Image 1 (spheres, rainbow, N blue to C red):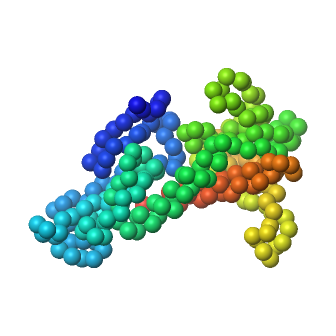
Image 2 (tube, rainbow, N blue to C red; image 1 turned 90 degrees about the vertical axis):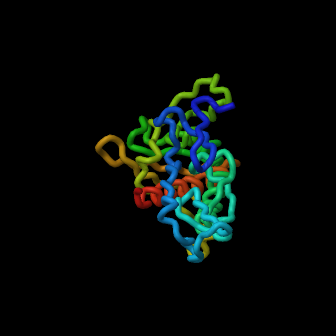
Image 3 (cartoon, helix red, strand yellow; image 1 turned 30 degrees about the horizontal axis):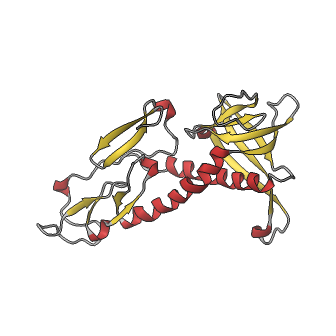
Length: 240
C-alpha cells in the first residue's frame, strides 16, 4: 500500500514510489534518464564487445547507457530515483549510488529526526533563540520549532524562525574549536547558513549546545553539510 501522498508507477526500468504532487518531491530526487536506443547500441560502452544472440545488451537504470551483462551486473537500491527494488547498474554508477545510499541511510535520517540548537539571526525578535531544527519529511524545508514535534503532530509547537527552503541555501560553513592542525580532534561549535529569501540574501547561525545534545547536534551539522554538497553536485549535472 502506498504512503499518503505517494503513488506507485511502473516504468521500463522498474516500479517507483513517487510523490503525487510535484510540490512534495524531494530535491534530492533524480529523474530517470532516457535509454540509449537499441539501434544505437552496437557494442558495450565499457569493454566494446559486440552484441549477438548470446551476448545481450543491458541498460544501466541510472545513466541509460548500453552495456554487456558482465559490465552491468550490479543490482543496487536507487532511492534517489524512488525505485522500490534494487535495479541494474553499470560499475561506475553503482559506486556513486552506494556512496549516496550511505547518505540516505544515515545522514538524511539524522536531518529528519532533528536536533537542538541556539539560533542567531537578524530575523529573530531577540537576536538569539533556542530551537529544535529538523528537515521536513519531503526534504524540502528546514523547520525551527520551540520543541521537538511529537510523532503524531498532535501537540502544536510554535515556530521560532521562518522555514528555510533547502534549495535556497547557497552556502554552509562549519566553525570549529580546538586543534587546528588535526581536524579530527576539532570540536564543532556552530554552522553558518547563507540562503536566499525572495530577493535578498540572509544569514543564519546554528550554535551547538554545551550539554548532553552536543554529539547529536554536531552529527546533524555534518549531515547538513553533506546534504548541501549533494544538492550542489546535482545542479551541476548536465541536463538531457
